[in-house]
Image (cartoon, rainbow, N blue to C red):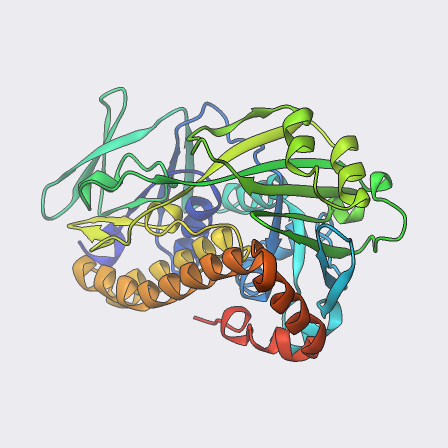
Length: 392
């Protein structure tokens, strides 16, 4: 393939897929994004975007399309779930923006997706196709044929599988990679900001810690609404993904929490239910001219708010590697994986560790709470410089 013939097919029109198309276009590489649903979804609930993510959105020309819908919380309030006592208040707002030269945003996932889609729609190098699901691939050496569920095929130089944790294309790269339930579930909702109980800071992220679970809430829609997430033990090891949930189910999970949490959960709704899954680390992220990206390659538990941001990092890195190595796709994919794998592994490990810390019980929880109260907040946040300071 020569420069002018290089073309990329992207399976999945979510955050990772759209960001990849935009990043490739910045290197003058055309792409076609295939979204299996008949229309691009207005999906999800809330999302936290650390400076490593907002920096990428700025570089992709997406930040200005999202800015008016995002919130910029001033602080992260960590509280004991049962008593409601604030254990520490970590600086966000101007402090983290100054430290990392980019803000910490919270937003509705739908608003981020719409901003990415608007940016992609405006680029003549990007074609967006809905109602077509890429389910398999035929690698012919010099190029690849992406095969849709209806049997139609599409020729490309490279196929990027950005089709999420339930990727149908992952089997072409690594065998026996079915996600496993972790025994935790996430219940998510968005509720008007007026439902926030008195005494809680409106423009802040709140995390309430309890044995076996935690609750997170933060402003979205420029502060007009609150995204609410309840993470809890699930002894049944449920596998259901993105389904409606009842308010009673959410209320049952927070019975042991302080009154402000119970009140907020009672007023919120409708709710969606996700069973949390993990995936063993893959031996490789690519095979021939097919490469995995985002959750298809390395799903992470949501205890560090980095899943979508990792996909943004993947997208910009992959595009840079493809542009740098030009017609040598094999070298480009090796460079991409060598660059991204250590980072993804570290974030996944840190996220899992955060979950264990959040869900501590007994003497371990007492020790955790004491450490949070005694450690200067700036020092706690400085410990995440490796995360938020990432640059390509």
